Image (cartoon, rainbow, N blue to C red; front, top):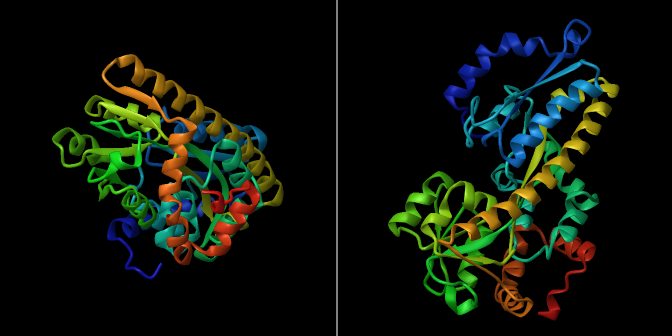
Length: 342
């Protein structure tokens, strides 16, 4: 990266230098290869569970040649530090949200933020488990990063203290978003007022009326107790949140071929675990929100969802110069999405 290196990261990198030397290729025969897998969420989340599963399978499939040390809850690096730490080699593996790659200059990943570009998990997995997804991961290599897989978080719902069924319901509503030009354009297309806020600050902002509503997969909404300060949830499934599991390229390329093959197998198994757990957690979370009786959960009809899609489809064209027309068209081709029918 061209930005100055964080002092805290450099300090921790120097302190970890001795440990890092122990995992160089020259030391493979003497001791297990250590992979430090850092992430920023809790152990009992889809990402946390999948990371733990990967650590277990990596040890089993490499017959002890690899030891994956998982560090959850930002134990090693915070959200804004971890990508730089990976590039420096301070950690070997991460699973950041897809939105983290645009700041590295790989803006094609913002395609995952586009509203309604995936109708369902079937469409999504044609991309994340297919050649288009792999092509996107390849674009990270020039940044010293190798992409291994995509892990689901889930499709998003809308929430507010008023029903959000129709496009006109969004007009003037202050909606919290994560930092994203695409999500900003999406909310403006609906007539809403996008407000960028840190995820950790969202509950309080909803509680105090700084913002009126937000978008999240149900599991995020429920585990962060946002439903306690939101009277209405609309199941729109309008957008997707996911992660990419990535490794330091120099480290990965230095591994013996048989070890890489075993780790790729462990990753494929872990991806199924991650996606299955994410799907079930979101189903359970939506049911739990309903069960509280505090929040009305409304599932949009196909006609209502069509009108939301029609209102936001212009964002695809608006963001094409930023994301890349080729990337958007490749997804259209694979999924069969035809914007001209809206």
